[in-house]
Amino acid sequence: MIPHHIAIVMDGNGRWATRRFLPRVAGHKKGVDALRACVRRCGDVGVRVLTVFAFSSENWNRPPEEVSGLMELLALALAREVPQLQTEGVRIRFIGNRSALSDKVRAGLEQAEALTAGNQRLLFNVCFNYGGRWDIAQAAARLAARGEPITEHSLDRAMSLADVPDPDLLIRTGGEMRISNFLLWQAAYSELYFSDRLWPDFDAAALDEAIADFARRERRFGRTSEQVTPAVGERRAA
Ligand code: IPE
Ligand code: IPE
Ligand code: MG
Image (cartoon, rainbow, N blue to C red; front, side):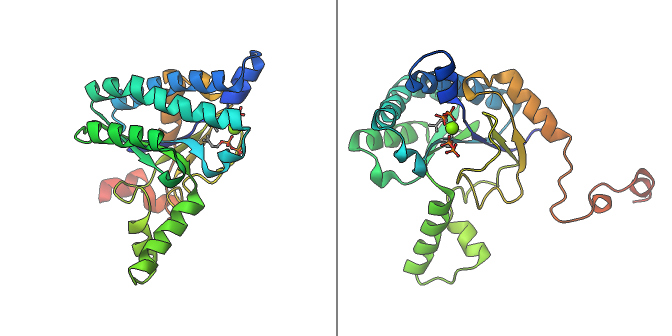
């Protein structure tokens, strides 16, 4: 079974570069190449939504030259990649707090979103200056401002990504087994997949492997195994 929605924490760019005695930003550049291949593969195998973690609200704490390098890379990647996304039928969308971004970066995001808004093959969400806690807080604040009751349902509708089903599969590369403030709310029932590969080395074959692993999982959502997969005899009787 192909997951409808895949989310990825693209981790390991810095280590990839450091191992090659390169500046960390070189790893992020290589990471863009891996992401391009991943977007293409998702479209080809029928994944409908891909959500990636590109810059966390905590990543501002990195050395200033790395932060500015990442901002420049975002602007550069947008200018270079968007025409290709357009021909591949990919709609790009940015998730996160935009108010802290420079006018130039913000304009680039808006332009890319507007240009690809009509594409339907794959929805590609880039979480940039995103934090799972920010997401929950902004949802609650919006409901409070409108005087609406805060319930599980209303919060869910006010969160980022409210218009797509929750991620079926959440991948983290780079060997770390943590969420790092990614989709805290939306990942409640995602299948988790951790890969030791550093993000720049995560290619289409590695993605296929993760999808194949997902296909072997039994998603129970609180039920029992028997409820989810009735025994062969019971299935025949039904
Ligand atoms: C992930 O790679 C990309 C961003 C956080 C922007 P890292 O830069 O965290 O790479 P490592 O974890 O240091 O290797
Ligand atoms: C998570 O990676 C954020 C992104 C991939 C953008 P980090 O490398 O920032 O995560 P921690 O700090 O090691 O948990
Ligand atoms: Mg990291």
